[in-house]
Image 1 (cartoon, rainbow, N blue to C red):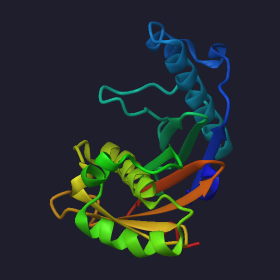
Image 2: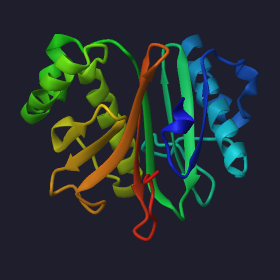
Image 3: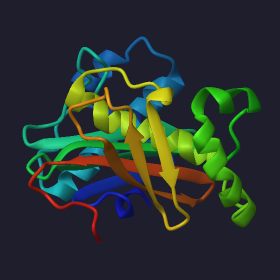
Image 4: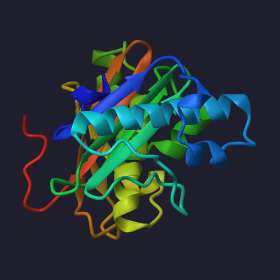
Length: 220
């Protein structure tokens, strides 16, 4: 599913965890003291990363976090990882086309009521009401949450700055696209970040990207 969301990129996903032995020794060393579930999700996300890198024609190397926790990709590659219960995925693209790339997966269930006001701005809540009425099968609040997570993952490696839920206003359409309007102070990636979403197999998936200035991305 994830590969269909990300233009100019390659994606891979798994719905069951792989053996921990698939990890590169440097990856395994990072989670040697972690719990079983953490080691399994770490291993499977990295397996997805290598599958995506191979599909892109890039070296299938160890994918280690930097000092801020963001994954480090081979030279010339940008990418993102995501995991939630029952789903792991990775997406990668060429840095000559993309400055930043972010993906997020969430269970397709409503956000807890107490979380809505923390995640959704007032204008977002207003925009979601007609969507919810017209398409009640989609949990739009969870979708906006996932879109904001994807935007942050695309944005942070470019800027190395924090981006809060309140700094992003998502306009989402029923056509599988969304646009993130950033607070004017959140530069230098431009005022808007485009993205795509889908719902399937009990998950909501979102992808966002920041194109290189000379590249035309996401028009198809």
